[in-house]
Length: 349
Image (tube, rainbow, N blue to C red; front, side, top):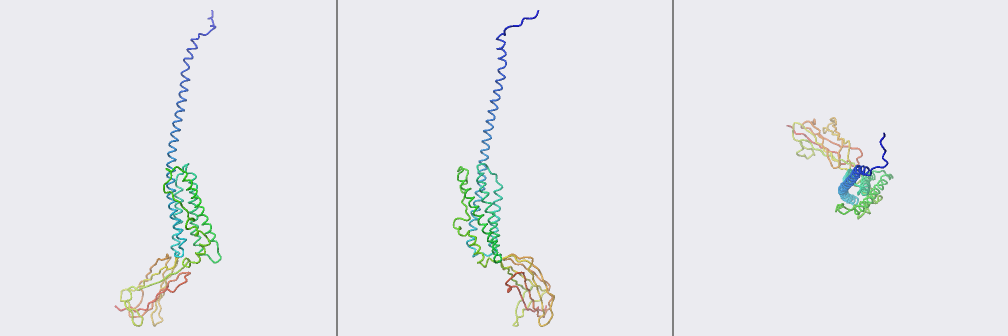
């Protein structure tokens, strides 16, 4: 006979089943809570580390920006002094000063590009980049335009237009830096270097000098800045003459050999290239001439000198000779000091 089917369920049965399932749901809730707490803790730690990192990056960036600004502050003084005292400048010195300013400005751009930019300093970094790049471009263009004005043909205004653009770039850099400095002042005080300077190339006492037409006129007016090709030559025999006779003949001591030491100096304001030296010897009172001797100097910087020696000159003792040395370079205007001449007699042994 089949077992009877219960028509009701013992309440204790369900109670036992419920007691069995409750711990599993509790563990799931507890695990979720733990995960949430861990996520919050990790997030807080990440934010704390990120805050400290951004803070350190901001301080590092501003320290470098302050260093670059200080350099540009000094450079603005140097440029203002140059523009103010152009009348007292010679061309090589002016070119050297302009070249150094352009190179230093380019180095500042490279240094700023190497820095890590934090979120708090992002706007400042953008303005600083505009400032230093504008200054660098302006100073490079300033150098080329000022030299171009000095060397321009009559009626050629292209270099003057370039000078105008150079001043506009420098002014753009001044405006961008002023905005960057204003943003820096809005940061927390402990992030900002105490000596963050003010920089303005085209402001302050030098403002009137940033007039491109005025500068161009002054460059054209000062003759000392115009390109000048000029060399001077001096020479001496080796051994050197020791006395002069009443007839203007120099006595050269006896020696195993006779040489002529020639010195060519660049007395102009530009590099001279392909300077030729020609030495000729003639026996006085006779038509006898010796084959001319020549040497070439590849180049001489302004203010520098080069020495060339012509050795073993074939002159006999007891005879009177005239020796001449001449330096020649293309485009030279003044040749009065380009030659040397000596009438001499070589003593016998």
